Amino acid sequence: MTLHVCATDTALSERFAPRQQHNNMESRKNTITTSGEGQCLSPQDRKAVTDIATFLELTEDCPSVNYPLCNLIPEIITEENITSSFNRVIRNLRQSASDSEKKDCVIIDGKEYTRRQARYVRQKDAIKEHLKQSIGSGEFRISKLTSFETQDGPKKRIVQAPIVVERMGSNSIMEVVETRLAPVLIKNTAASIKGRGPHGLFHEIQVAIEANPNLKYYYQSDYKGYYDHIVHDKMIATIEQYISDPVLLPVLRNFVKAPHPEGTIGISKGLRSSQFFGNLYLNDLDHTMIEKHGAVHYFRFCDDTFILAESKRELWRLRECLHQESAKLGLTIKPSERVAPISAGMDALGYVNFGDHARVRKRTKQNAARKLAKVKSRKRRQQIIGSFKGVACHADCKYIFHLITGKRMKKFSELGVTYTPADGKKRFPGMVKRLSSIQNKVLEIHDYEVDMKTSQGENRYLVSYKDKLTGEWGKFFTASEEMKDNLDTISNMEEGFPFETVIVSEIFDGNKQKFKFT
Image (cartoon, one colour):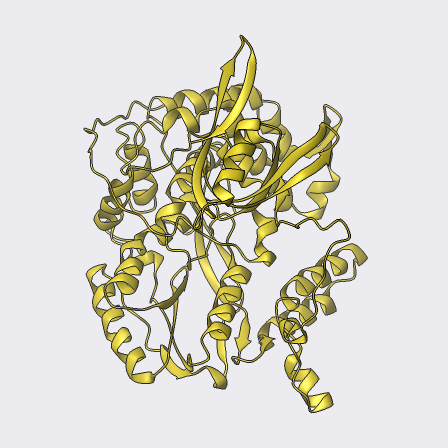
């Protein structure tokens, strides 16, 4: 991989001269109804979103969102966002460095960096100011992409990467764009989306099968050369459904057309934007399949589609609908698509799901064994083993248990075992949050507990909630007499819980702050 970087600090600074490119576009004023806002994360994936609440505090959360969005630039060029993106790219540079490069380190402010990292760390302030200025004015562009070959499982792919500073800028932009547009995506799509992933989607498929014993069959397909066949005009039109910012839109159009500026199809496989745009490109198709064609149990991971149904006839009908909708986007489904019984083994997301149990895919086990055989470093071997354990723990051992014992493994719910805490208090899921960190967010209040003692005092209420945007469970303590009275009143209503609210704060008596439900 060849990346164009400057050898000296002076030369690096000279690279920052922005290009004068800016197009104006009138903001459109229309509202798009979205679905997927009540996302629920599996326990396995919930840990992946521990940082999303912190980032969302940088944005203005409203009870409802009107699309297309405008004025996103101020969020993008915040000091926190630019710094976070800079640090992310710097960390990735070290991960991609060779062992010899890591050993040839440079110390800056007590931290070790490779010489390549150090060139950018020394210019950190200049780079950040350049990014703020170029993004803020709408002049930021991806000027050059370097192509290189990478191994993706058994396949070799050609991917494209921008120069380092432009990589930092694209990360800054897409961090906000992805956060803002994630709610418009369906719940059951998971590729490269914060808080979601293959394990979470695999869990959702398992839950659907367990909850619906009549789901006996599945349909599976993917697209031929998906990223290479995304139509530029259709991709840009999709983006414009959700974003109307006249400063930001020309930048996003550049992201789409970067690998083929004069072409009409194909987006980069290496840009930060490409994976999310790939999800967004199929968003209308997803909603159409579910809401118009009745694909109730519909799941998607990037360009891989999985549909569950009670009969083959229903799946063949949905297959025809999917082909028709895909053709409208200029996409072709591979001939390897299949309709088959789940009991025969549904190979999806790294696992083979047989309905009553799931095993790790054979190829995954073989790849882990081959890597271990080649590696001598104890640290690296531990990393490989840990990675495989992370995959294996999402499968189960029901089948092995049956082979050994001849018995069916019981579910905990079938054992009739219950536990009552000694203090008699309810236990709520999620982390304890400060009220200031969840104000102005749309929350579902599900339950509460009274007479809680904390380090701040006694007679507090513990309230359980779910974030409507992220689907994350959490809880907070309150000593507010107004909020406590509201909760007691609502608990006496027949259909009081759960209820939706936005917690806001007020200043009274000069400098005192109180929180309340709205």
